[in-house]
Every structure is written in C-alpha cells, then in structure tokens.
Image (cartoon, rainbow, N blue to C red):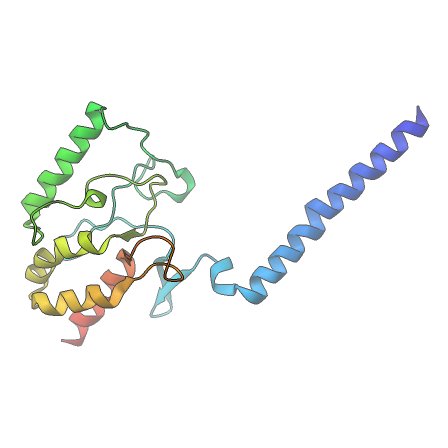
Length: 194
C-alpha cells in the first residue's frame, strides 16, 4: 500500500505546485509585462480617476448621453459579477414586452434615425449583458436627440461618432462598433471645450 500511496501524493503535490503556483505566476508575469493595460481590465481614466472599462458596459439613462445595449444582468444592470443573457426566445412574450418598452422609451426621448427603423441592438440585451459597444447605426439613431439635448450641431455629434467608430478587427473579424463610454467621454470633452 505504501508503494502505491507515495507516488500518488508526490504527483498530487507536484501538479499542485505546477498548475496552482508556477503556471499562474508565469501567465501573470507575461500578462503584466506584455499586456499591462489589458491584464488590468482595460480601465479608462479621466483626471486620475477610473471612470470605467472598455470591456464592460455602463448604464447611461440621461438623454444627453448615448445609450448602450440593454443589460440582462441581475440584480443590477451591467453587473460584471452576474454576467448573463436574458435567455428569452423570440416567441417569448416577456421579450416582446421588453422590446416594446425600449422602443417606447426611444420614441419618448425624441431619438429617431434617418431610416426610422430602430436598430436591434438598442432594444435587445446581449448574450453577456455587459456589451460596451453598439453598432454605428444605433449611434446614428441617437445623434439627433444627443445633439438637441447638448445644444450641439448634429454634424458635430456625427463627427464624434465617426471618430469613435472602430472597424472590423484586423479588417476581417466582427462588425464596426462604437464604444459607448468612450463616445460619451468625447461628448463631455467637446462640451467642456465650448
């Protein structure tokens, strides 16, 4: 029995050291050296204060800001500790009610895109409930409202949207997108510069 137990204990201790201490230490060191900003959450700072992350959406309700995707996280919206989708299917009445409510809120805010069609990412939640980005169409849909609320020319707000629009990753992957937090910070900076 002793001949069997000793190798098992040695292997357990060795694997615990390698996978529990050595590997995490190496990965942490490489991450901090090569990807310091990303390894620390891609945080965005203004005036020495952290205002958010590029990777996690935030709730913006004021009409003077661009609004992001709905968040299905609980108990609070954009709760990074509770990342989840709504799991509501297209035939679910609760999803239809949620979409109708968001369309009504957009209509009441005076937001209307050039085509009048509401972009789907403004009325549905994402798979993670934490998306920090919206489509350029969703940003364009809100330009009129944001410009009116801020007393800015629509062309000036459109230029900020164009400046905040990121293309496909490596020119191939994904879709063009706009980071809502970065766009709203650019709006605040443009307003302060007036």
